[in-house]
Length: 179
Image 1: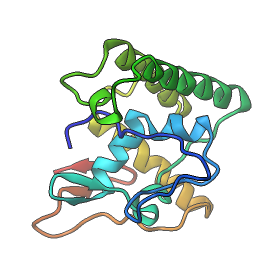
Image 2: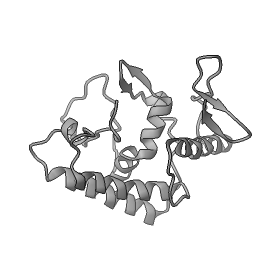
Image 3: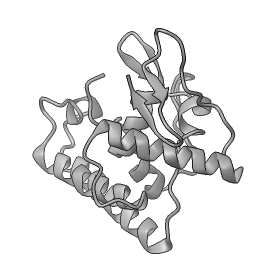
Image 4: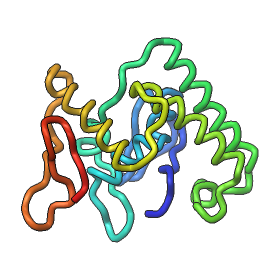
């Protein structure tokens, strides 16, 4: 998958999801904002399975293990307003479907800009001003993951890989890196 973001949408109670669709009951604009961010996309690229070249988002391995940040009410409100801005920007393209909107070769510039603003707010939730690389985002996410495990607020589902085929290894006390 070559998209920068996973195309997500809100649906009503009367809509029926396919059994391979990951749904989040009661999701808010805050959930949409975090799940529509580069931080979540980094988590997906790191821990999700694949079917051919497409990611497989499982509730157990991807969603339930995502190291959600702690956020004050003000920061939640900011993420929600920026998520609403993404949704409003998308609404300006009623003839386009999500696949069109999130195709890297044709993503509208204003949608990319709305996502960039959202990404900046999500990065701030993790205590950073910027996180410039995929590897740096992985490090922040796995540090948070380990912190949540230590506090007992997350159960261990993601383990470092080992063996010759491993692409993710632990290095040092609290660092993860690609090899």
